[in-house]
Length: 73
Length: 232
Image 1 (cartoon, one colour):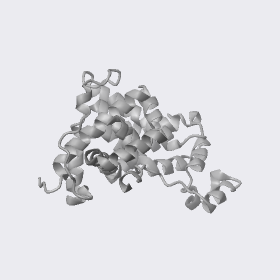
Image 2: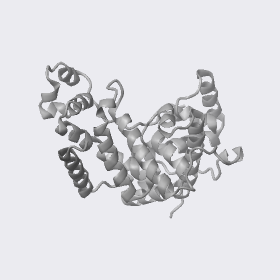
Image 3: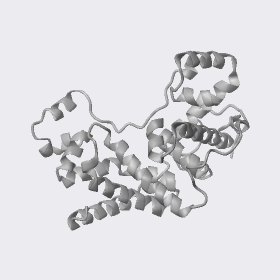
Image 4: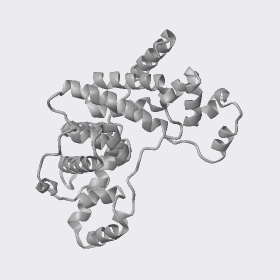
């Protein structure tokens, strides 16, 4: 599993990369785990899990301006 | 093998390249650029903000506020703490702009400040539950994935957007904080392994170990929702 995770990150040697790719050809389980780990990463990195409401934007900018005007920054 | 040729997608802020960037960089007075051009280049905005241009800094805030809130929320999993951490991160970044080395990426610098603000609040709220200093507990047997089953193609599209969001939030909430913060910095925010280690003050092997476990745990939890033929 460590090697698959490192492989996803491009953090393996050329030789090991080739070995992993050959292994995937003959091992459906490892290939499936690899695809699902990648999908997991892509789903989380591509999703807007958190809403950012307009009032939060307003509060942030008001706080920043207040601090700037007060010269506290 | 097509399954091994695609790369993990990373978040990109979309900095300019090509002719427009060239035009921006060749402008004699970067602090007084037309706003349409100034919006396009992070480095010029940082330079202008450093020289006291508050509007330039606000433009940087506009550009990154959503992403920074997502980061602080994903680390703290508490809305109030996340908003406080985000506000303090922007204020500290403004106050310490003179320390920012312009050869590096402003967004990465900002992420490190925001992550530290969020971690501080997480430690306060969970003093006995969260420690990055401790070695990862568990045996290598835990690394063997269970319940291997095919997922639907584009599994997240099986659910409505709001439903997917709810599932992902539930799943990430269940992840232990010391695994979650590594996953968020490395895989969601796209920091390198070394940057993640530096931000968290832990070793590169510790990042890799926590990241592997975080990925496997999340996959396992998503399996329940995304396996072919299942309906929840």
